[in-house]
Image (tube, rainbow, N blue to C red; front, side, top):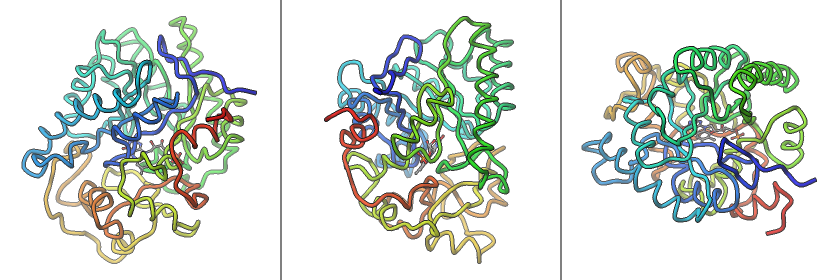
Length: 357
Ligand SMILES: Cc1cc2nc3c(=O)[nH]c(=O)nc-3n(C[C@H](O)[C@H](O)[C@H](O)COP(=O)(O)O)c2cc1C
């Protein structure tokens, strides 16, 4: 059976596959553009998006603002006509509002926002064509967001991303629930679909729901479609592609990982995160606080208490994509140990969709 297309309002992706946003520097224009060109939805991560700009060390916010423009233009050029490219913006980001507004200004097709509740997202996007999607991990979060958006802004989500406990990066679960059985998450997923259905009815519009976290092959995609998903969001598999924007050393960490290398770490954001074991994660076990070399204002003050955080998340994510992957934080999904070769985005999309290249 061919996979269905993914419709997000008036946008249509040939394949129901969204490439998950990956910061810092893992999903930029190279990866997002290639995924969009191959018929999926490409997502650029806004997390310190301008880190390669010479201006970054002096003025990170300014560098990030201009990188939103340049990365989007590059991704759209690669994607070609009809290619869908969006941004991932974490709610915990310092000056979150400015990031959203800049993405809207550049004409982003879509904004996906999680790591917190994107309560004000509709107000920031206004009447622009940019589609909006919250990331949720529970029916309760879906209810709070959709109810508030309906009441305050008389609008609803264009798409909902449900992130399960097997995802890479920050997880919307308690530490003890990060190993949750798939069947338990399936039940929660069904409850989220029910919650979304209330707003589909109220606004008389289809709200596609996609599942993320540990989706590895075609059988996983078929499984979530059978549960009622309109598609999936996949991240880790796209890291080991030639087009992925992370350096070779980062991709090698993925290829060399075994199951015992997958760890649940404590993020300064106050959420657990799934990452690869390395010198950095070892260090967090023996050092109560890793001194902050430099604050680049990545998180809002209510998400980062500079005086008490165990380490600086920006510094560690930046180490990961520079020349020190052992000294950095390498986020990865729960199936990362199954990756053993570098591929290309068209090859991976052909494998997942069963459409010939
Ligand atoms: C390296 C890496 C970085 C990530 N960064 C972000 C991010 O900046 N914002 C976000 O919302 N999700 C982030 N995620 C989560 C992904 O977008 C995605 O939802 C999740 O990893 C899907 O699970 P999978 O990796 O098993 O496919 C990240 C994941 C990885 C692996």
